[in-house]
Image: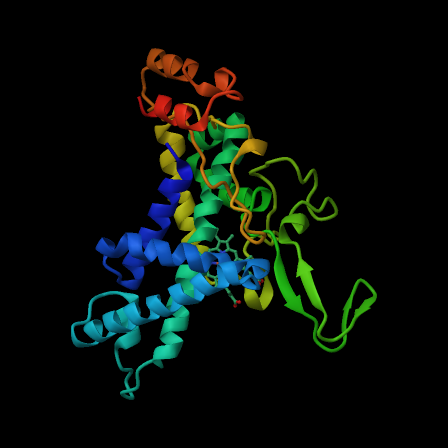
Length: 308
Ligand code: HEM
């Protein structure tokens, strides 16, 4: 099973249902979302190879949404588009540009590739910590704390960009107004002066100072949704798969190269269904490709093997 593919479908389908986009348009929305997702990376944002298709995708998506919003205005459903289209008690509707910005940038752009990659990163972390998987299986009440710690330990958001305001000072160093600054949340989340033994995955840890979902005024608007989706995905995985082994060494995993969003382009795990029968579990586990060397196996052959 390719976890990235499943997570991508799951997270986009959830957003589409919430916004009110027909699932029959999934492939088209996914295509637009992928192109726009490059713009989360400021370096790609300056590169016309990425920027022009992304702008084109955004404008096509806006046309599509506007048409759909008109349909919802005439025939409302229980979804975000209909609520944006509906007039308030003073007869005013949300400005169309604001509505488009909220849906395209704040929901689809900010909420799709982030949670997709976060789920994949968490699966990688769990595959490397089978003892923690067992803890979660025996104590499902730890899941919420586990999600926070997994977000800290292997967050998908790596870095965010800020422009210094007048009078900014960091640890006694004055920063000139207008200076562009890169703030590495991923690094802060492994800061030993904040988190004891930061490279240890520890579900009992206090994660209140984690920056995985940002902080202060820019704290992630979709944090509840991302936690819920990750929780559902991990809960299903740990309770349905016997041995969460990954087929590639972590450093060999194909990456997208987006400097803001870290995740594996493809993340294959053997699908060994969990069962109460210990013999079946043992056999399944022993077939786990992690038990034999994968290094020389062609990825296509590996996938074919997985599907057989
Ligand atoms: C695991 C998944 C997610 C991660 C790791 C994540 C991470 C972050 C981070 C680090 C920030 C702060 C950025 C900054 O300080 O510049 C942020 C902001 C934001 N996130 Fe998320 N996010 C996730 C999922 C989502 C989802 C599902 C949505 C919406 C459906 C969303 C919408 C937003 C928005 C709109 C902001 C900007 C808030 C503002 O600037 O006031 N995010 N997110």
